[in-house]
Length: 76
Picture 1 (cartoon, rainbow, N blue to C red):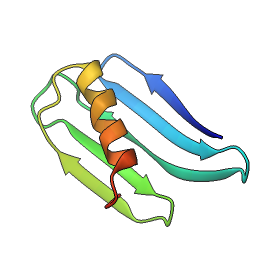
Picture 2: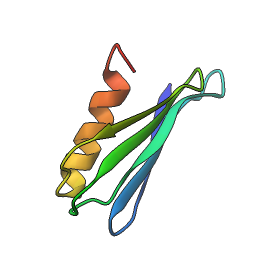
Picture 3: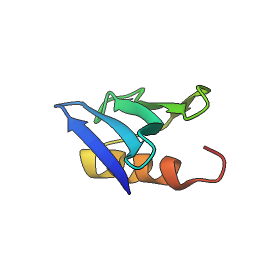
Picture 4: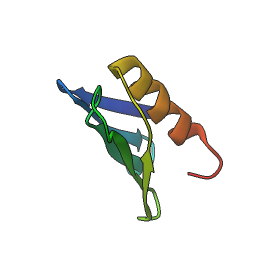
């Protein structure tokens, strides 16, 4: 079973995706500066590679959708 943990603040959403069967962290990161210019998502893949994706993220719902998109992407 995979579990996604979210920690939502006033202008950020931090997350971790965990595989509970193997106790492995599959990915983690956060969206910063939600609702402001220069917002971005910082993602750490299961292999330790870090990725920064910049974009205009105006609200928390969009941030969570962005996170889900990255976590389900073949590339990330």
